[in-house]
Length: 100
Image (cartoon, rainbow, N blue to C red; front, side, top):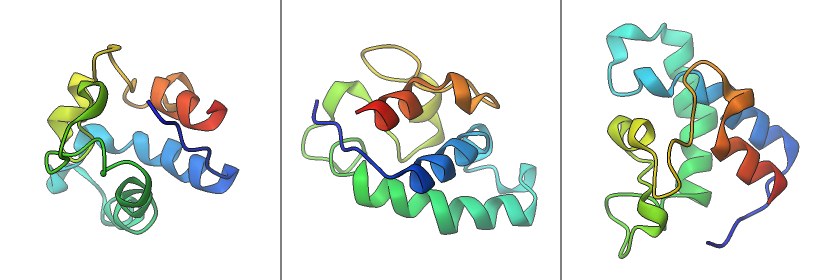
């Protein structure tokens, strides 16, 4: 797996966004500002750095990890769970990106 090292601000945005992932796709559960934050700050990072290999549209999904659906986030990948909802500091995904 090729890990792309990201600057701290995008990683921090992703970490905060991970708090919202369990609710992604269920807009009624998100406050408007939470949904706006996710769409403005987090989803663009995922599109730019992750979806090429980790989306339903990827030619080959790497590591069994799909990041463009709520179900994919919750299921994790071949290495197991990648997020702990509401606890981004314990997220394997954030740790992997940050220490990549």
